Length: 328
Image (cartoon, rainbow, N blue to C red; front, top):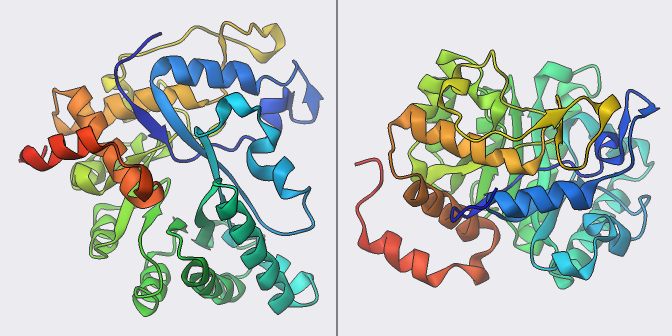
């Protein structure tokens, strides 16, 4: 599938075992990231922000940053550095939280120097999974990571689940410490959406999990496209046939079960970056936007402003400045 639409998928979990062909501990097919990427590029995906990395106990940064992808992907694959809220106990389990923090600073700086790390995160609060990490520990080290963003002058890649009040309180206390950010994989209410939009430097990331119900679509319609980014969060968060957003999906790819793997087909039930095109289509459909190319330019521009400020598409920038806002 070829496309004139340009998109940036801001969230892909390339280190997930499904991209290695392993499902529930069982090897079903060979690792296939190059094939997955080829489908993404053909669909119009221009760049991808992949997994976040946490500390020096992982493999070397050169291996970690986009898992040692070949030089042909240079300038297309990026990542973040930070600690997910469900992993924040790692600060204390390390035996020296300050040393752990300094390792994050070093990792971020090395990644910036290599041109691969574009944000701090994924950090935030997740009260749906307190069995992994207590709320007080999450809050303590979410706040600490604003210090990291301030130290290396990067935007923040944020996570909020069932924690809007505490999340926004922490953001308010630290709003001067980060230059911009995105609350990714947004699944909250219209009221929670408005709380996030009150922060002028914050964008909202939309994926399949954001498009499940009619209430989700109502919340989506309240987000100005100038404050939005799109993502897959693959291999999770696909748009399913039962989701309210499916009515607006126009692009489809052949798929086969993992046991009958075919490199020319997607794996049924496994999300991948090419499907960010479907997210774009649902946003357009739900908001009644007929010009999908125009919408894609706005979302692309938003993402560049935050994560690639030195690489804005100047032609698109001029076009956007000369046009009226797409929502008007």
